[in-house]
Image 1 (cartoon, rainbow, N blue to C red):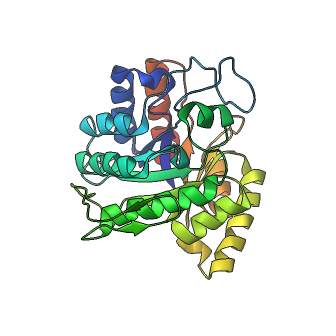
Image 2: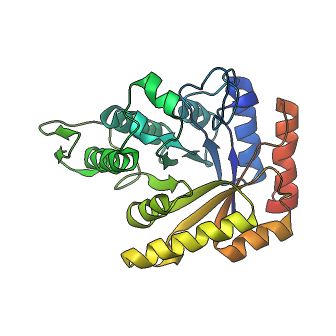
Length: 282
């Protein structure tokens, strides 16, 4: 089991001092990765399904991970997730290639299609066809990352006679992970990604998602075992060695844990505690 730490760009970790210290502590404790979340804006006042209050601090994922890269050496850097259909894929490809270069090839590109309509409205991004546009955006980004002479002709985006340097360190491109708990999300993971990421899932929820992933893999002729399944356990789940084994038995290979604590001192101790109790590193 790999262990990741969620929220390296938000809450207390929106402070650069705290983020750098927590990332170093996670690396020292044996965490495999740290992960960001993303909402460009949030509805004010908060209303369902918005996950946090509008004044909750949250740094941009690519910028935060580039900063973390400068303060660590080996820990992997995941976007968990970037809301792809809200972004310009050509600009985002440049930003993430830059992050991969600055981290010497440690980026994991986690993708979501989004669900907060007020966020899409404020950005000026269409709320319809989010999944189809995400798939096209990803294909365009891969063309920019991997083709000697990038060229792409899709329904919504077209380019040729261009180039974007530098290319990512990882070849042909950074690892791709799709998030989401729908049949369509499972299909995108099975068809287009190395992995799938489920957020705030207990064991029963994870089992249902894994069942959906297995069906999606079967539909496209891919072995389920070739999908790397990542889960952030629900806040109500106490994650100990026995619980981690239960997740592993379901097919989960990475647990991306929520932050333990509300300030820097508590987060540092929480990372060390995971190292002692689950990873056996400190």
